[in-house]
Length: 415
Image (cartoon, rainbow, N blue to C red):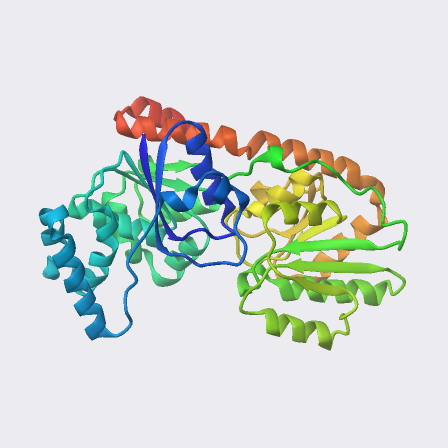
């Protein structure tokens, strides 16, 4: 099959869930092309980007100038220089009464697709699904599949379902990564017969299973780790406050809390650490590639994720695959990733006391860590192995292409 991936940016180090689908489909013998709005030019890239020569498969949409006059002039230039590739598509894209203010932006989106045909157009996030719906209207060929994650569902809740109305009309299939997303897509008005619960996953084989059964004997240090973007929805201030409360109750504890990631709240979080006199405890670490993160997790004892909003956090899959007991908030689809009381603990969002209590319980009972680690690893192997998930994704694509309603319903029934 020929599959087009439409993404907001590529390559993005934190979006391994997209990368795993792309490389998995390539491993299964399919032709994948990537269409991205931007190249974020991050200082680090995942090694699979080079291994699979993915930049050579990536097409970047022309950048849209902020200045209106420059935007229009560049759009006219793009139309003139590319008109010969597909006059009909360009003329359809200029249907101003239909697309109104989106017309100019659509020209920039359309250019990389003018002379291409695909079996599947796979969009990640609802915003990219909207782009895909416009392309379908203009005549770009392919079955339109959109996978909804976290941010796009929350945006639909906040702004209203109409922001995806065109997509819901023309989309062939909608992939929900969690029960939470599935229920919200139904609430948005998506035909349930077009929705399949299909989760994201990880390459379990890349995560060497290893647990720390005791504190670091050389320093008697308990190492706690969080890997997350430093943004509001990750609730990191509650994690920091929980560590502070834990140490006030147990001043004799020797703790290290490493927060790996970057984001707009880094300054605020550093200020909070200083206010709570945790400079010797909390360490902020710049983003790491996957191999570095695995190494960091293998040195830790407990993983925490104090989010206030999530869809289905891949990082919790990674932590359990390594063998770490986890503590996380019960938001979105998090309860689908953790076996509460067995591979980790779930606590209410924004509840600093509950978070501190569960971390304290794990510290007081290190004898539980090995069994929790084994339980978590087994659970991730069974439910979130990306190789199995990618094989299922191919079955979904084939059912769409052959209009095999029985096969499609059977796949829906698996959820």
